[in-house]
Length: 422
Image (cartoon, rainbow, N blue to C red; front, side, top):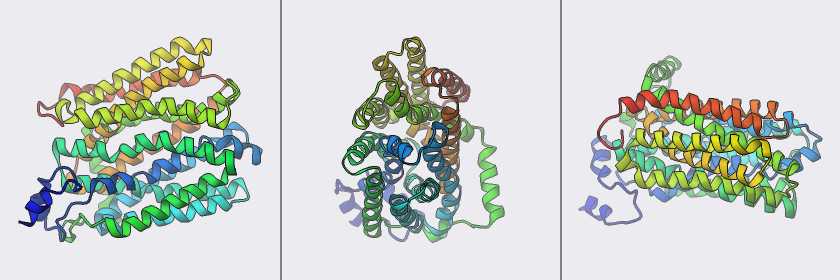
């Protein structure tokens, strides 16, 4: 009777048939977490990441920074989000999802306040480091919760839903950052991050029930953790999924790093104009992610990855064709097509990677996320270093990234399972 009552509630996590599976695993609280909370909790990390572009010109002016030093505002956040996931994943497998998520949100809030009060660029970078360290818990835990409850195509669809904040916040955060910077200065952007952190922590205390039963938790010993990571690295399917979507994500990150400077210097755009121009490219990612949510059960993970690669290649070729003429509108359209391909591949790649070891979903989610963020951080450094005032280096590096993604997707495509969601 209790299970039947839960099935009739529209607000509960979409795949209701997971209730018996949770009970079979010995979960002390078989009620599912509302999907809305998992989506909102996942907004913490991308909000802190995507609010920065509109703030960068003002920060660069205040601290008299060159472009090479400026890109560390992006790279530090991406780097710590990557490394932090390697810690949070095993911690969530050992101590449960709820504690780890609340710890991360608390660190994110504290670091955001510190960044808003920083009076030197070194101090700002230190708090930016801590901000990324806290935010990455909001990436690991929702994905691990999905794998606690679901498998197969249902997990792939739920994973796409949980990654919706990654596609929505790039639309909201840059515009919010541009408005806050215009009205109150760049520090207001970090105050907004602190407000988001406080709200999420408060809601998490009430809304996030534990989904990992004590009987299913694993050891936190260093040797055991290293063996778990080594086992994932030895899985060619895990590496193929993780590297494929991470490579395509780098094209998105590359424009994120150099786009504001290019639009400011080459097109003379204001912070609000930059935010709106970046918004046009983010909409491509959003459309791709929502299409993945809609069609992943029918098309399957591997097919959507291949489609994502095809659109990324198309956008890259389009960018190569117009970059020499410095046609800003067409270049933004080309990057939007690239971003659409990234959106198709992003959540489906995560779903495929975390399926490699469902018994250690936190560890698999952490390692996949770490690979994504560390490659993004490395590419951000390279993008800032080779930026010459045009988008030509970015366009040619996108060619290499698409080639890398294709090399990973090809064996998955050839050995894809006939069942949707594989």
